[in-house]
Amino acid sequence: MDVLWMMPPLLLLVPLLLWTSSTFVFYFKKCFYVAWMMFLALVAIPLCILKSGGRDIENMRIIRSLVRHVKYFLGLRFEVSGWEHLQTEGPYVIISNHQSSLDVLGLMEILPDRCTMIAKKELIYAGTVGLTCWLGGIVFINRKKTSDAKSVMADAAKTMLDEQIRLWVFPEGTRNQRGDLLPFKKGAFHLAVQAQVPIIPVVFSSYSNFYLRKEKQFKSGTIRLNILPKIETKGMTMDDVSSVCDKSFDVMRSAFLSISSSVTQSNGPVRH
Image 1 (cartoon, rainbow, N blue to C red):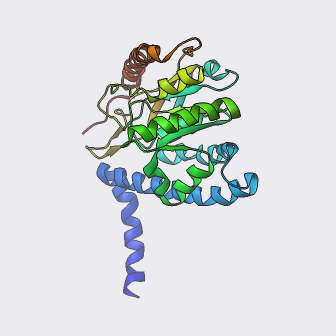
Image 2 (cartoon, one colour):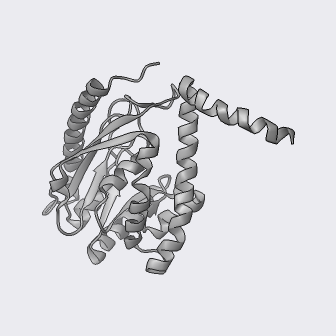
Image 3 (tube, rainbow, N blue to C red):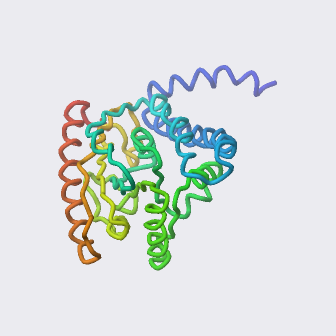
C-alpha cells in the first residue's frame, strides 16, 4: 500500500525532471531507445519467421518499417540529399561514418531493398535485437581475428554476386564522436574490389549539436544524410584497394565537415 501511495508523486516527478535536468533527459532517452528497440525486435521475430521461414535478407523490409518511427520519439529529424545515387541497379557496397547506436535510425531511413549490414559478432548476443539482426541476414565478423574477417568478406563478396544483394559497412570500425572521421579499415574496399561492385558513400552529419555522450546531453535535433555519387571499382585489382580507400575517405571527410558545420549553424551547439 505504501508503494502504491508513492506512485503518483513519482510519476509527477518524471515530467519535472525531463523539463529541468538535461542529465535525466539523456538517461531517459537512452533507456527508452534501448527498451523500445528490444520490444520492436520482439515484434519483428515472429513476423520475419512467418514471412520468410527464417534468416532472409527480405526480412530487412519488416525491420525497416518497424524502426522508422523511432526518430519521432527521440525528437530527431533527417534531411536526406542525394537520393538519386541509391537508384543503382544490382549489388553495391554502402559505406558510412559511425558515431553511435543512433546511426541505425539513419540507416533505416534510407536502407534500399535487398540490403543488409556487416556488423561485429558481439551484436548477435544482444537478446531479441541480436536474433532479429540474424533473421535480417546481417553478416557478422570477428574483428579480433583478421583471418576470420577476411574469410567472411570473401564469402560476402560471392554472396553479393550470387544473390544480388547490397551490403552496408562502417569502415571506421568503431563508434567515433571526435568531430572528424577515423582512418578507414580496408575490409569494405577489399569486398567491393573483389566483387567488382560500386561503392556508395553515405555521410551522417555530426551529432554534437544535439547528442554528447560524455557530457550527458541528448536534445532534439536534425541529422543531415548526404548520399554521395558512387565510386566505381570495375577493372580494379587488389593493388588499387589503398587508393580507392583513400579516395573514399577524402570525399566523405570533406562532406562530413561541410554538412556538420551547416547543421551546427542552423541548430546551434549543445549548451553545457
